[in-house]
Length: 368
Image 1 (spheres, rainbow, N blue to C red):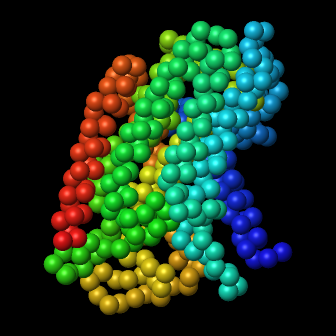
Image 2: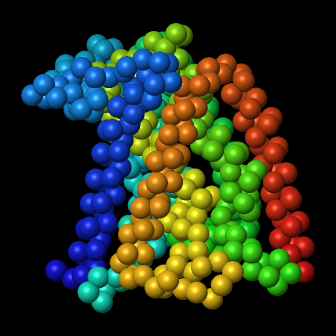
Image 3: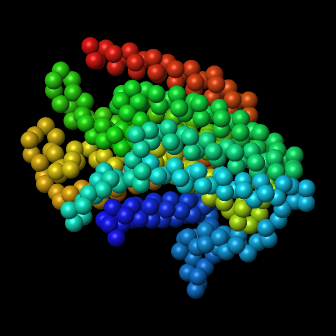
């Protein structure tokens, strides 16, 4: 088998293993983190041979329950679309990881490969395009269930997701202007450079959170709203709509919607880490080793070690962003539907436009 095919199979396997397992563990993380924030013990009852492992077996118990639970379809529901909806919600979220780089390059046995499944020139646009398909899954779930609560949840979710997709795209225009690319690998690689003032190297990396601080907060807010989680979970709103668009789902179909929600959290974290936190970049670490700031000293490191450190740095940034989203989820109360729409159209959108104008002015001024 050619080395290229082996590398590709390895990258696909790594991405699927990481995302699916991380999404599964997030069920435990959500329960345990909420328990700690509310001064409770949390999940700790599912044992294997008497070992509870602080509740880590609960996701496995949930999976077994979902596999063995009846797949109920309402009598008046549209069976085809009712069955397709969970797949349409989950598959785009998994597909988006194809263009998100989790490292720079890896060299083994003289063969070098990019640590990304598909390095597209328009990677950011691909993510937006493929993630927008999840809206169809939500709408179909609400409509095909023949349930008023489901229909209301589907309408809310579709309006919210479409509104914030526009806002998300606009917040990133400044990032494209600064780094001059839509390719996620190039954007992450450009953040390894340093700010230079008056011809002096400051050794401060050009991470997106420093070059586009306003866009960072706007994009993170819009992305959390796009995931339909608290404080933006009016599409589910248990106190109003039972479970929203997936009220009439059970068994594995319900689990797929549940997994899609957690996979979206990982997607958001990976995107924010790539666009604003340098991706795999570690300050002062380059392919040839560690550059000591303000000196010409370079601590040489093997390329394999540098590559693995980059992958580890990317994963750590993703974990921190997941923790942040979970903290927001268990801290803020649910917004009203009109408040969510007002935030998107009357606050974030105008601020995103202002950010684009300011970025264009600064870029033009620096180029001159």
